[in-house]
Length: 333
Image (tube, rainbow, N blue to C red; front, side, top):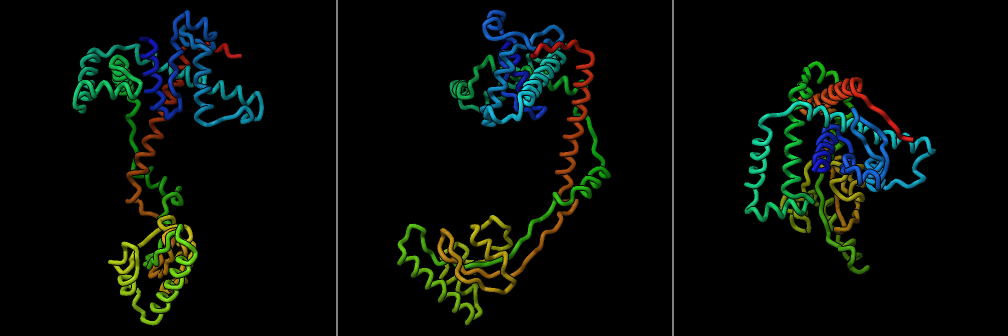
């Protein structure tokens, strides 16, 4: 059961820090398991962290990022990565101990309430349990996970680790210093006509579509009525609106379309442009250059970002205090 508890604590703490720790289920393995699997690489206030836990996280990182043995420039660089993972495991153990240092009297009642809320979203008890099984969980492991979450939430609240404020002045300053990150991309207001020609169609069919597209372009140049021609001949759903696509950014249409369209001047009619949909005749009606978003548009995003940064800094300082008062021994070679 202690393995389940620790596994839950790892996930909860890792999510808070934004870590990629996958789950150190072996960190609290039994003595028999430890003797078989590995030796102790660190101790946190007398609680051992085993080499098996370190290797488990190392292997998870290698799988996740597809790291080869040649990824590291030197043995020293590889050892630094091992030490980085070990430092995370030490932090997890420190926080786990701190979280469990003070009991939460109503934790069982709150845990049951949350479990019942989750159950109520399923059509039946059987469906609920099947859903857990698909996530490699059972009712006991879910209870431990929810219990650990509640304990961690109370710890955060008790130590005021999320109580931060972000002023309008800070938001405005960040906006001014990072304005290049808040730009509206270049846009064009455009309309088009498609003469369908599927990629798998034969050369003869493609040639006929191209010839028709050329004729349609000549007609537009002569009649000066793009919208009416689009309604009549275009195979695109935009035909009903005269081919109007509104304002678009690069990437909205195929690359071949963008390459031509974003070079056109307002009022210019392109030569037929081939994409997987067929041949396009394009007209650009208006252009908007790259421009900064207003502070009002990005204020909420900046406020949330700065709040997260401050919370992280606050938590880092708290962890530093925990480490300062803890007895930490490292035995990593």
